[in-house]
Image 1 (tube, rainbow, N blue to C red):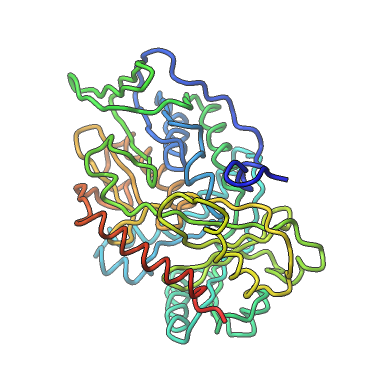
Image 2 (image 1 turned 90 degrees about the vertical axis):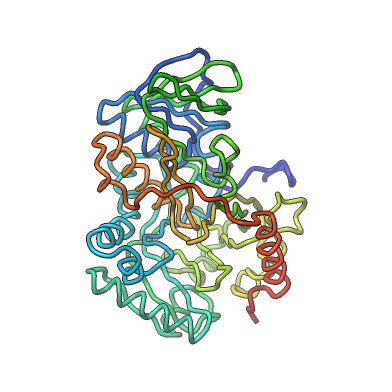
Length: 429
């Protein structure tokens, strides 16, 4: 049993394989590429660079997977917030087609890497069901399924009864099924990426926060709190929802929100057959969505938004406990065994952002709740770009960093919406 809040580990920290050794940077070094941030993007970039024979050092302020990469719901969902037709409208011509192909293949990237490197990562790939909470949302889900089906995906629309059968709850009017989706133990996966990167030759340093970036004689010097530094031709910054002030305005270019999750104790065999009985994962069509799945040991997870601030006590998860009981009454009094949260970074346009604020400096930020697949694939794309200098290797064109106007006021606005959501339990009757 985990220790009481707030010292208890997340479910993932309690069940992941041990972390690989990642000793702090002890002396100043020189390398081809320095990656700042040991989440999915940074570790994937390091892995793919090292496999290409490029020397790379990863600097992580805590340990690989400590941030959102090791605290999310573990759902591997392809695509972006925009549907394929919308993406091609936003990015006409070859750029749009390339972005759609990238977005559609993000889940493949994850499961291919797990298989290739024989990672010790509990995972499943039965598909993702998106439940529609209203007639309007059902029309949207139908369009989404049809667009992916036109592009060769075996997506299908689900009626009310089919959705209830696959999810184990009758709270949706219908939905659609994307067979590309699945789930991983997210911290185990982050640690698996770190091990694979190390095996390929990358050097990963934990407990080594970057404190400043300085351009000297055409190279970058990355200083750390210990006084040791890394000199590199190129630097990748992939700190996402945990970005500080290392890059001017980067932190204020996103809204960093906490995604809150609760998990029950393992359900009995009888109950497991009534909740997501075929092993699908699910998130719904609400603006402040709910997402849920069973883990590899039969625990029911329910996730959603909570306060933007860090949690104070167990009451900050109470809305998710109420939602769980309403959506899955058959679970009854199953004990909530774990409560945790992790930050996601939301951009104004709900797209991931790439920035090049200076020569040899590439920044990636923005996951919008699909970070497992998206950021893994983004790391691979960044590695390919750094090797070739071909802009076509990047799924999106780099843009200038732009702070969100009235950033603090927008955070208050989002907090008010979340408070309303919590009081109303997302409209679930």
